Image 1 (spheres, rainbow over the protein chains, first blue to last red):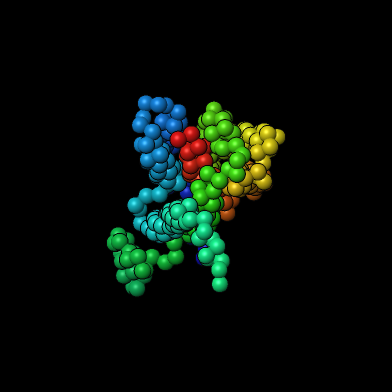
Image 2 (image 1 turned 60 degrees about the horizontal axis):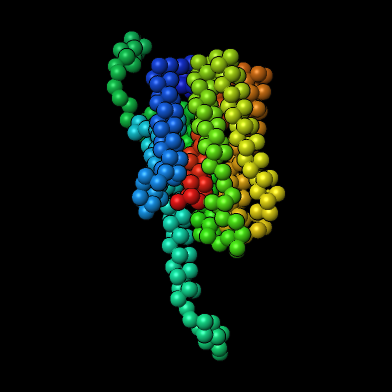
Length: 129
Length: 209
């Protein structure tokens, strides 16, 4: 069983991939950053101190930052050679997600606007043969 | 003679070209497969997000998010998931050092926080349905219950998975297979937290802006 040999060489060394201090620091850092960013999100949405028009943009920026913190600190996405494939698929996933969400928003918003602009008679003319 | 000739050749340290390194270790390939599953899961969530965002203003004369949501509850739910993410990471350290006490303790904290999250979310759902704001009330509420309910379903499945994994640690010990499954569970739980960041920003905080 060749795979067993490989497994024992690569997988069965306790604590081989990272030392305790580094991981603990990484996870605590992730927790602290997340607490700060979450607190900021809730504060921004509740306070009147921020200009109302800027709140959605600020919330989006904070959410993206927090997702980045999670990816780096908890999901171990790095620039190392082992995660090249992970990064490529992540990029594709982000692309598809953005396409689905923003594409739907743009199309439905545009349709909404067109329906509202349409005069009441238009429905009848459209129905007419 | 040939054995003597071979010996020093093997001791020369030289970077092996990637094409000659052979198959990647199972830890890398298994987590890559899990990563692909998580990304496709997140793409599915994106469809639910898109539906919710498109339908959020279509309340059909019913209650809007601002009237229904309680920001303090959402903050507590978020804290539960965030700290459960941290305890899940600590559990990962416990697994890496093959330490059963750390693993069990961290997993128990993760389960407890996950259960607290589920209780809060289900009590929110029952309160809303009791107020006549069920998923059938308006397109907005259909989108809300579909998206948030789907995330809650994922959390429930994750908790079930964790219980199964703890049973495997108890019976099989830290065998390579079990360790890899625990690694996959770690990825799954953190990915759920990433989705929740989107949920509380778009669904809950978005309702107050």
